[in-house]
Amino acid sequence: MVDPKKTSAEGADALKQYKRAAVDGKIIEQLSSEAVGVLEADEGENTYDYKQEDIRQVVDVQTGQKMYSIKGDQGPYSVSFERTGNFFAMGGHLGHITIARWKDRKIVRQMHVGEQIRDIQFLHNRLLFAVAQKDFTFIYDDGGLEIHRLRSHTDPQRLQFLPYHMLLATLTGRGSVVYQDISTGELAAELRTKASAHGSPLAQNRWNAVLATGHQNGVVKMWAPSVNTPLMTIKSHGAGIGGLDFDRSGRYMVAAGIDTNNARPNQVKIFDLRRPEHPLHSYYTHDAVRGAQISDTGMLALTMRRRVVVYKDCLSTKAGSTYMTHLPQGNDLHGSAAWCPHEDFLGLGQVGGATFMVAPGSADPNFDSLEVNPYQTAKQRRESEVRGLLEKLRPDQIVLDPTSIGRLSKTPRDRHKGPEFRKVGPMSDVKLQRGRTRAAKRLTGKKKVRAETERAMASEAGGEKRRAPRKGDVLSRF
Image (cartoon, rainbow, N blue to C red; front, side, top):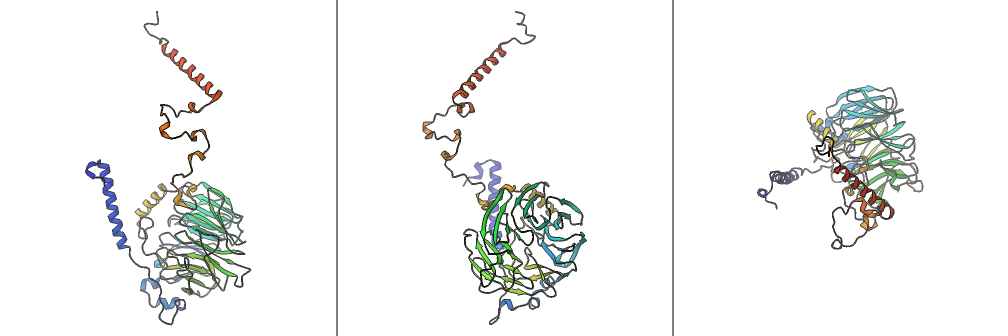
């Protein structure tokens, strides 16, 4: 180890910071040992038999207060949570929008846009949210003021936001995925995916920011804004894809669709993206799946017309049975569902509003406050926004394997084309001369002769100019 006394002051400070970071890391690892609590059944019972009312009677008061519903008469409603999990947005099909601080049941903003709403999505914080309306995608602030009208996002169907790239992605009715940079306002890319105009899901792999579209022929395609062709194509089902999502690690993909050749057509298949040729395993559902969502701990929620089914430990291994089942009262589900960050709750969009379902063990209790802080103040929110803009990643850095960025090329030099990559032998046989790497040294034939002639003429002209007497010189008279 380098002795701090023998280093400069700057190097000593860096070593102290490294040591302090190592000590803080050990302390955080010890303090972040809170286990994830799950629902356990008594002997002779099953967890999927427990209803939400039964859970309400045994949980604490604060958790019971969050198990409620928001009524609305302009549905069906699409739902979205902010990244911190403190705010909740719901947009009705007939144009009604509600922004709520859902933990204490406080409505922050209600507005009516007067147009059809197909999807709603928070951006990097609660101050901005995007709405997929009838003709275009609109961006509003927390006060309900229209900030932008994205005319390139025509006939929007689905929305996704990439927080580390500051990109808003829209799946349009003509089957295109449009990327918009919300920090500069520029159009990043527009990809022709040939997806169906209505009903095709749009999912984001949070590990590498790759977007996936589900098609009516049972194919899943993955996209990046810098490439016009799909990064990967997976044949999942025989017919349309109804639900699509990725886990937080980016290894597993869930695709729910219909297999017409199967005796049980409603199939949910789990794929390992490291070996995507065949699914790991599949699950059967009684009804067609309208949406699929994976929580931070790997729980899978499948929304159907009248019920919600939750699976636990179902990705790497096949689950023996369902974990929870919920039948919302009153009206049908829209298919739009969202897991609340850092909370064991699932937000469900319904025809008559939205409801919050508790699912013990669905959230990760150990979060990184430097990335997303649920308890941030207004000053910390501003600082995180500035830091996010400074550390924003470029769209061309979205690849299937993000760990490949920054690696050295393993391709041998003699495979590259160009005279500068010629194989010249061992370094001991090469004479390192001054100016050897100049461009003129690489010329051959007539070009080399012409360059040497021009250089000699320029040198001679420069010498004559230096020898010429200057104006006003006392020797010029002679």
